[in-house]
Length: 231
Image (cartoon, rainbow, N blue to C red; front, side):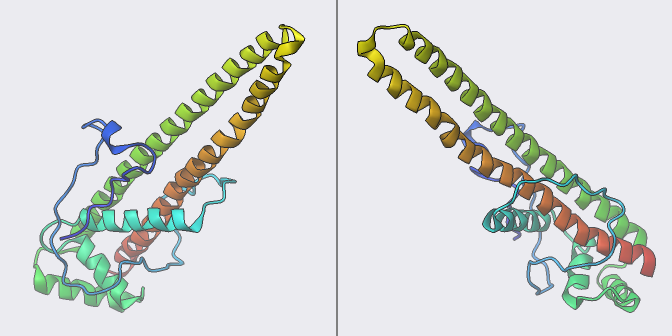
């Protein structure tokens, strides 16, 4: 049974705070007969169907990026439908590790020996389904990340405004309360440091979401292009 990893528990928000409508729908998938690793093949084929995302300056920690990529890979696997479809064809192409036209033709022949209804048209249609579902998941996680980031920024502003007013009031008091003012100033200075580390981590996860989506789509589209050009 394929693992369900499209639910990023605790990544941006606590799971208990997600409404039923926002939670990803879990889909059952059948075991596949292809025995290959879960890493996606590298491809030099252009991904013209999907425009490049604008470059972002945030540097993503490798562990965060690898975790998000693994979630997308496992999520792709969890979408697999019963029977032979694009997912099994994708795994077969990936196992060979070549985009040679003969590989695609051989894979189609083998697929049709398993299920006669497999055609170029059906594979392309099924590929669109996977791409669409991945897009939906990407958008949901992007919205969650941006929402959490906005929440932190609002809290940060509220805390700074409150502390600034307290400082202003304290500065109007007599000399004997100067020590209290100094404490509040120190607290004000610590707000940015404590919140910016959280914002930096969320920025990394948002960019990791973009890069993971682009990586998985690049491999899928490489196979789609191979089907279009070689079958």
